[in-house]
Length: 332
Image (cartoon, rainbow, N blue to C red; front, side, top):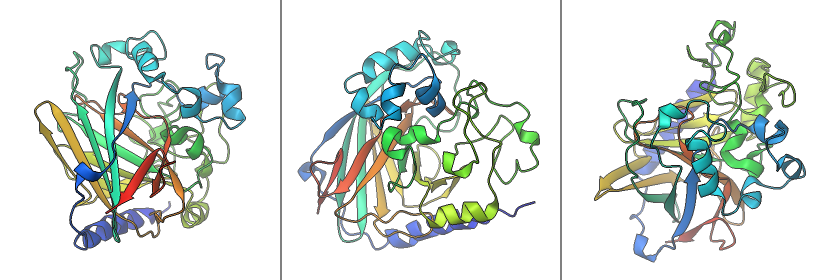
C-alpha cells in the first residue's frame, strides 16, 4: 500500500502560504484596480467526457480542434445555466437545486506587488433555493484553480479538465470504487472519487459508457514526476465558516488548511472574497511571473451547496500586467 507523500507536499503549501503571508505589503487600493465581470453558471452533469464525446454537445468537433469552451460559448452562460438548473438539460436531480439561480455575474479584480498576487471576487447573493442544505457548515465556498499550460485540457476548458463523469455525484460514479485496493491513497470517499486529471490515468474513456477513468491509475513514481513537471491544477478555496484551504489536483484533490490565504465577508446582500497568494512557486505551487498567462477558472458553491451543485466559470487566463489577459493583475 502506498504511503501518500504528496499530502506532505500539500502541507508544505499551507505552511508556505502562512509563512509568506507575513511578508505581504499593504493590501491594494481596489478603487484603482480595473473590474472584470465574469458570468458563472450552473453546469449540471456536463463533464469533460461529455464535452468531447456526447452527441448532445454540438461543439465537440470544435473543442477537439482546439477551440476553447469560452471561445465557443461567449455570451451563452445565462441560457446554459437556466436550462441545466431547471432540469431541461443535463440535470437528472433538478429537485436538489429547485429555485437556485442558473447564473450570477461576478466582479473580479486582480493586483500584484513584489511578493503577492491579490484576487478579489464580488457578487450579489441570489435568492435561496428550496433544496436541502448539502453543506451545513458553509453558506458559501469559492474555489480557484490555476494551471501553467501543463494540463492537457486546462487551456481549453479550465476547471473542466478535472471534471469527470465518474466522480462523486456524477452519472457514471462506480458504487464499488471505495473498495478499490488503492482507494485510500486516491482519497476515494464513501460516495466515490474526487477530482482528478487525465495525466494521472493510463487512459480516459470518452466514447463508450461508463465515461471516465477513475480506476486507470498510474504508479506513485509517475505521480511524483508529474508533480515535479508542473502537470497539476493548483487549487485555493475560501470557506465561509471554516479556514481556507490550498493544494492541488492531480491523481485526486489534495487540500489542507491554509491560514491567511483568503478572507471574505457578507454585507448588504453581497459577498466579497479576497485571496492573497505569494507569486513564488515550488512543489505543488505554480510560480506566477510577468510575461506569461495562466489558465484559470473558479467556482462558487452558494446557498450551502456541495459537490457538483455549484456555479462555474468558463476557463479564462490570468496574467501580470497584460491587458490582453482575461484577468489582468495590475501592479501596485
